[in-house]
Length: 137
Image 1 (cartoon, rainbow, N blue to C red):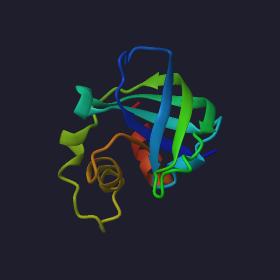
Image 2 (image 1 turned 90 degrees about the vertical axis):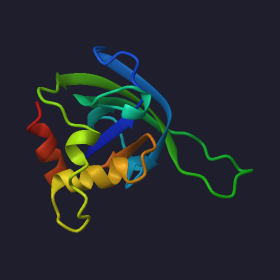
Image 3 (image 1 turned 180 degrees about the vertical axis):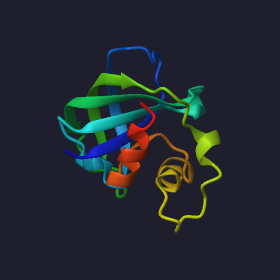
C-alpha cells in the first residue's frame, strides 16, 4: 500500500466517510487505489485549517480524459473512510518556513507539493513524509 495526501474543500471535517469527485492529481496521485492510506487536509483556500484526518481509500476511479482537450491533468473520484483524527495542527502556516526545496525534509516535501502551486489536489507521498504525518495522530 502507498500513502497519499489530499488537500481539498471539506464541508464536514467530522464526517466518518468522504467522497471527492474529479480531484486533480499531481506527483503520482493518479495511482491512488482502494486500500491506500490518505492524509486529509482541509484546504485553507476554502476556509479549512490543514491536516485533520487519516483514512483509507475504499474506492478510487480515474475520470475519463476529455478528447477535445489537448492538455489536461488526470483526475480521480475517491471515497475515503476516516481512521484517525489529527492531534496537532499542520497546514500552510506550519509548512511555509520549509522552502529549501533540496533539504530532504518531509515538511519541505509537503510544502512543495501542496503550497508551491496552491491548487487543491491528491499527491503521492514518500515513506518519510508519511512517517512524519503519522506523528500528527
